[in-house]
Image (cartoon, rainbow, N blue to C red; front, side, top):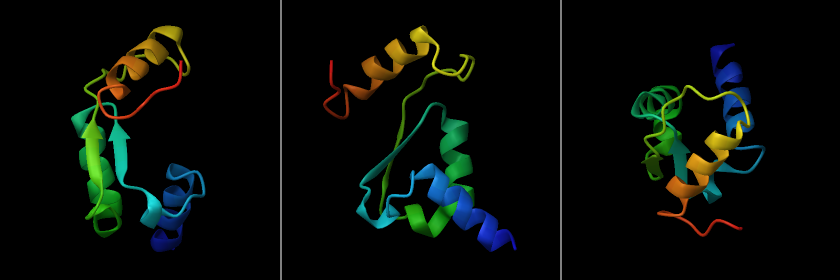
Length: 81
């Protein structure tokens, strides 16, 4: 049962995309990265885990959070305008 729950959570985490095709996973805070490693350990072994160091105190889709995400992500990937 827990394995099935983990698989569902991983599918939600990856938005249905195969994890094998992903090369990196991002987290806002280092504690989120630790949680991801604990929950999905082996599945993330060959993935780059990028901590964006953004405090998790924003509301969902808050404009200031979007600005922080864009600024942090541009150091790692090309972010569209």
